[in-house]
Image 1 (cartoon, rainbow, N blue to C red):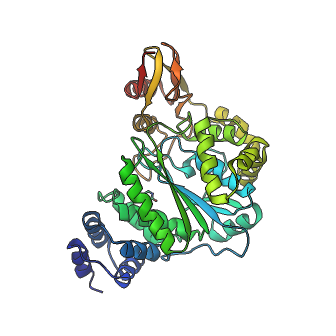
Image 2: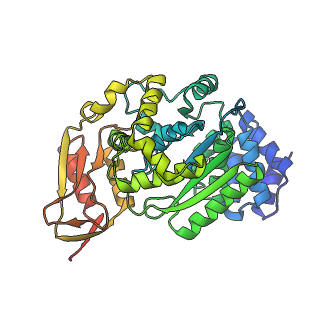
Length: 411
Ligand code: URA
């Protein structure tokens, strides 16, 4: 395979064969195709796109670049993927809930990058919680508990691991075929029977418009169908954060409220809808497992199995109390019409809840909570949210950034 010819053909809009794509990905995984050729290929895809056949072939080659789960016969294996948003802690609630419904959920998640949070960072705010676990250990836990929440190991979709890092520094992240293949290779390597995709659009999402989100959803569903996996997609707006908390430990605390049968209505509803789709249980039954403590017990078992102590969960807010906690007062009375997810996410990032580089550490304690939701009434002087910061200067910076996040219409 002459790689420069293959890159030129993609640049000029030709369709590559599955064998061409397989050779490229195998070479990239083994190191015989260097980063500079793969960057050129990614840029060629960015401009020329990929046909559905190419997209499926690239997904398959990346999925098969490393280890995959092989599940013994048993209950359905399911998962959910969200394309990323602000305050999106659904996975923390959905994974144990789905296990209560008798399904197996081997959830391989990512870290936050840019303004979007990551499930692994949130889980790591639980003292001792291990997300770096091997495939054998994960399989054993899945058989025992029905749920495992882990990071991508070095041997799980290594081609995606390398390519995603390369795309991040070569301006080739926002490409529908590259996003599709990256997400679907990892999800399909979990070998699920059913998958639900929560495709976000809006100020706090990758996809800014509903139309772009629809295209991404269709591309991902086509790949799922090609691999014989029942793949559902839901389009959900991400113009305001999900729930009322943004930030790692703050989000785990809010997820625990939901696992205890409470929590913000939008978070509970979204979780129930996604869980109902993959479990084929009614929302009412799933809600009962939140309300009667079943899902919370399963989460506690998950925490214990992965190195944490469930007794720490009720005191997470104390364990991660930020040095400065300040309220942001409303400047007028009226109806809240905007709580901009993009601005709130950017503020949480600047406070230290997210990372600028993949190698940066996140601060579990900082973020924003007690957010007022759009459609709710506020009085002048009432808190629109609380800012959790490392220093007075950081709190000041956050208050100033959040100045343009909210709109209040006089009523
Ligand atoms: N998440 C991924 O895993 N890959 C992408 O390309 C985008 C979001």
